[in-house]
Image (cartoon, rainbow, N blue to C red; front, side):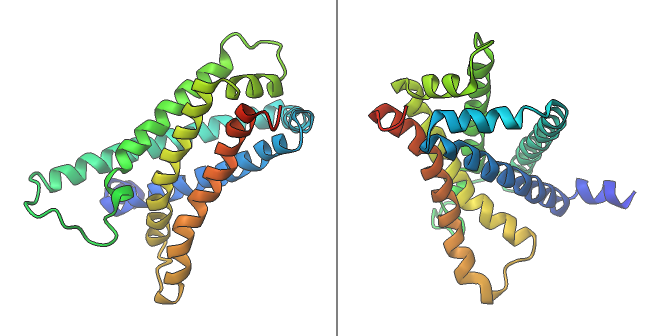
Length: 213
């Protein structure tokens, strides 16, 4: 009973956002590490993918769990957005904002929806007409297309914007906001998003430049 009451509260929903966000962040880190093998060669990336998919049961369970976590994160974020809008039905005449209320925090719902759109299109591209093709061929062919490659980079720009506030908010929710760590948290809110942006955006840019193939 207490758990049901807790998750229906605003604080409970923030904890759900933080916990699911942490899970998605960990996945993003593992995904970035796997994709980084493309910087060495497409053969190494294919070997990594083959090793990963040699355990279909684990992949299926992990993928299903990840999808559930992602959907809970999205749904909870949308609920919190509308609850916050209802709590502040009118706009303030003064546009000055608190220091933490930055561009990233004010556009979380929009950057999140852009990421959702990207993931939907990205997964659709991987599932249409690619039967029997090596995953390395699918990835390099898709990201080497100028329009899609730039779309991919733009998506991770939105992700970096989303993470710059989401990472800070997650640490605040978990109570890791002691003044002793303020300097570290303030730097991590830039370092973490920029690291993911560089790792992911570099792949299509290097493919388009012909540096990797």
